[in-house]
Length: 431
Image (cartoon, rainbow, N blue to C red; front, side, top):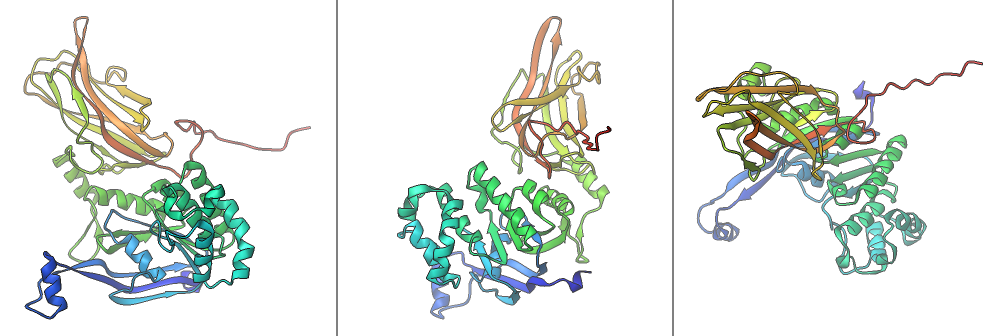
């Protein structure tokens, strides 16, 4: 069916290659044709091919340095590809790096006219659009001040207001919305919805997996300059989660991904250390260390390591505890708090009546907590603990505070901390 759809953006076999020099003088020597060439080739993009169709909202995700911003700059003409072709059908409005296209010495009004003129509008046409731009930006009299005096929040308000009010057919946004406050972000996403209804094409890069899940029809996943895949938000977010923990690689036959069994094996062979992505190397810890948490990690509903969990799916908290003393009936615990520090939920083995035996010197225990995620989409922190009682005395053997970050990905957030999973029924009243 896709063959009959109109293509808005076509990217064919695009490469973007940079020369990396160890020393500045090596660059100077090459510029003047002196000596041998001393540089390494870095592929910011490697043979990337993709189509974006009219009326789609498309997300591009990947780790830092994967080539997301580079491909947007090539699509918008800010950069030229080293090789390959890009075809754009429609007027583009792009909100890329904060400050791109704005003159820092001009005030807000002057920058509106500057950007409008660059997009091909006449002064009269910009006059007609000015009230809607100012209303959306809502920065008051600051619009008459030089933009170099703006806060980053005011800057992005004005930049986004210009970008969406010049009637683009294709809107491209690169992480810029993370700067605005929550109310402005809500207004921008409401505008996204309006654009979708009008049949506009939207392409945006974001680390906000909740927004990717909620707004995108299709998602492209990049890693180290290569296009790993495309598909539904759920499929690509799942693949991205595996990229984050090194479980999604390019095989020798050119295919991508990993077997489920390989992922499980790697997960059990080496639980995450304290210095990997998503783990807090500065986590606070205390206790008498008679029992010690030596390893810990999370897995998703496929039993693969992850730092992101889809709302409504199952996930498992793992920790490994080593005993150096006889510990009568140790209690294993984990809790979740939000980034503001409010403890939201948690449990332990005593509450769950799961383990009432003793731990002996030299023993190592693997403990798992498996549950379904009902928290709202967002960022959370996990704390772990091993405690217990010696007679009537409460003992803390080892506690780790805010040791891990977990991202909950959701396309539906209700009110409050968690989802009551209500079933709503509306029907005609009986007379």
